[in-house]
Amino acid sequence: MELSAVLLLAGAAICASLGTIAGTHSLHYNLTVRSQGGSVQSRSFANGYWDRQLFLHFDSDKKESAKPQGPWAEKPLGTESWDTEIQELAEHSKNLKATLADINAWQEQKGGSHFLQETWGCKIHKDNRTRAFWNFYYDGEPFLSYHPETHSWTMEPSSVQNLAMEVKNSWDADGMQSKDYWAQVQGDMFGRLRRYLVFWKGSSYSPGASAQRTLLSPVVNVTCAEALEDTINVTCWAFGFYPQNISVTWLQDGEPLSQGTQQSGGIFSYENGTYQTWVSTRIPQGQEQGFSCHVGHSGNNSTGLVSCGTALLLPSQWAAFLGVAAAVAAVIMIIVCVCSCKKRKTKSTAEGSDPSIGVPTVGDLDCDHANAMEQMIDGPTKSLLEPLSLYDPDQ
Image 1 (tube, rainbow, N blue to C red):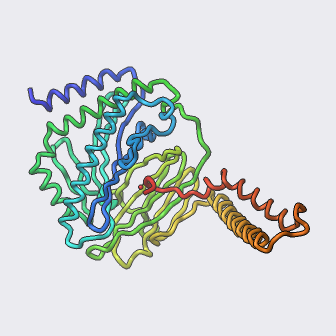
Image 2: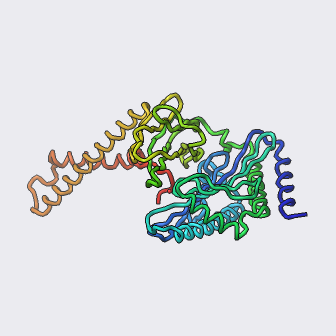
Image 3: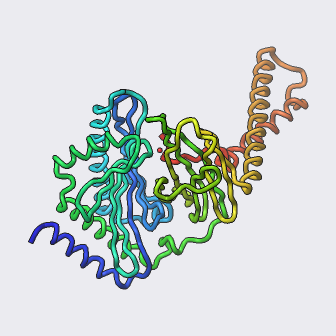
């Protein structure tokens, strides 16, 4: 019997053993590598998601390579499981860097900043139907997707389609589209999902058991890629929102574009429990003003024209925005006051003794008050001012 048949039968047995576990469950990973000036950076980042909740973060530059995240940090998996996670993510990272290096070599114009992203995972439905996926994205555009039915890699229309063809031809020659290889990846994924389900089953660590959070509206941003053949790839990003139900749609003259012309990145979660997503499309260069991105979340809606690099705020965000602005202004005033006080004290010391020494002046009281305020902003205000990042901070 072929290896692929053996592994697929093993996968079927795994799925059958999940009959007592209710609901649909999924496990997937998101890995990113980058290059700058034609050189691939050594650092890579990856996140693991169980039932769409972040449970694992991998940073190749840190000593603790793979760290459990969220509620799972309180009940981590055994050492053997984490070692397996680290080894496999490191291997995926190595292969992805090699692919990005090949892409850089094939580029006609060297340099610039680029990133290559790999996503793979599996899902088990409550009726035991299974599905697995394996996709690649280059600079946010669809690059290559594996189709298990045909055991082949396919390319989506994009500005990087020629590069995708080069990679596909290379992988075809190396046997990366082998059905045996895919069966092994699929079997490993479903086996791991089963172990994690058994480990976390019925506990408070299950995403379904988590407490409801406060409604958080998304921050929305539009980015544009370089023009190619008189078209521009535009991406509408939404991040920092809760709950996860959201609609992001591109409009032309106020009318939604067809689903076939829009590419969605799916919905992923942050470590803090909020979510992120993106939707991209290609538009004719010079006609940007006719296109807009519409975002709907929990009854709040916002529509903004294509203006790359600018953020949109949903109506419910204005109060929070004004609060942050006030906090920033307060912090600046405190810093100025503290610096002024320190300068005044230094000057006073340099001028020698003062007959009123030991008796606080009005200026000294003001400085003490400012110093106390400086200590206060070391808490919640500073965390409020920290920016959200779509990927791990370097993502």
